[in-house]
Image (cartoon, rainbow, N blue to C red; front, side):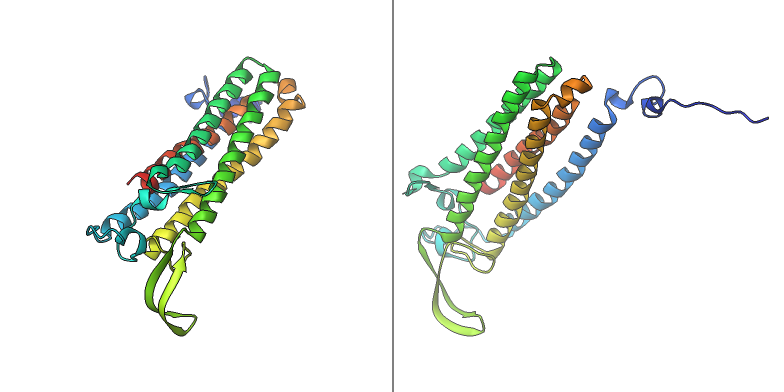
Length: 256
């Protein structure tokens, strides 16, 4: 005797009496993605930490942290410039501090957008999403300037006698940093700086693109017609993750 059963599609994800962890499918999948992404960033930062502490200790030479390819550079001597030609010990970490403040404030505006979504307040969702987008673009602009300054440098560093493009060059001098040589320290320092901060910057850029899409959907009343603003909350989880990762990148590169 054959029996048939009609299954409600919503009950397939319901897990019986309730949703797993009382979270929707989309939110749970976002958490899974963020967890996998956290493993990627953890691996990169652990690699940086391993190379950082395996490098020879600074010997007290006042020029070592700037002109040696042996010692790992001191952050205060590398990230000590500010737009407008300002440079020196008194400006150490000021610019990157500004970048961090901008990103954290964009996380605050995202919280306000999510809160407005819970209240079905379309006007404030649109307003706070716009401010979040502006914050993300401002951070990316700051990072672009920082990369440009890091690449061009502020002083000439004498590397010594090296082979450049197959030719022997005596007293080879460079400005700034690239993937082969850099005036700040070992080549691995510049390579990791470009890769890790660039990887994070790509996440910020992706978040800005998502925020723009959410902004236009909210402005056009898409979520109001759906009866909820859950998509704002899901993208907000990603944006908060990007901000949290920056705290670790900031600590590893700029503080230790």
